Amino acid sequence: KAPVSFDISINEIFLPLVCGGRVLVLRPGGEGDPYLLLGVIADQRVTFAYLVSSMLDLILEMAGDAGGLDGLRHVWCGGEVLTPDLYERFRSRLDTPLYHGYGPAETTIGVSHVIYRGEAERLSTSIGKANPNTQLYVLDDELRPVPFGVGGELYVGGFLLGRGYVNAPGLTASRFVA
Image (tube, rainbow, N blue to C red; front, side, top):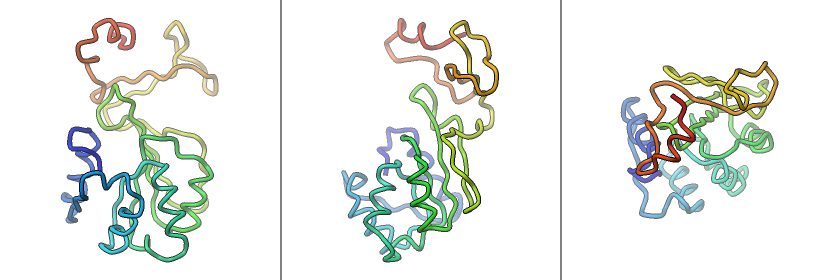
């Protein structure tokens, strides 16, 4: 669903293939059409879908209890906040894992994720755990770690961190800490 130039397209293309699945290619602009997405998910018995939270919300509302989403076995959300309300709507309709990933523009694909597998889990606003080879730090204005539960700014380190902004050395210097 993502343009090939967007990093998450790597997951959308290759995850199904390495797991023995197939990739369905939508018509240009189809990723923004909830009616088309719901139709493809239902008609093609899609088992894995990657959606932004707002699109998942629309599809859940449109599908209702009609069963068009019954084939889904894994749903991955990212790019937007996953609200507790959306999680509850998802869980009330589907008994399948819901993955939520976090990845700011300064990184490649994602730096953290959380997997919600069952009814007993409570959703908190969380970006989950750091992905392999990634470090997450919550720091104060002087780049010191803050105590657990205290607000600060999120800093990311590791393999998935970009080298800076293209043709913007000033912005890179202000946002990337060596």
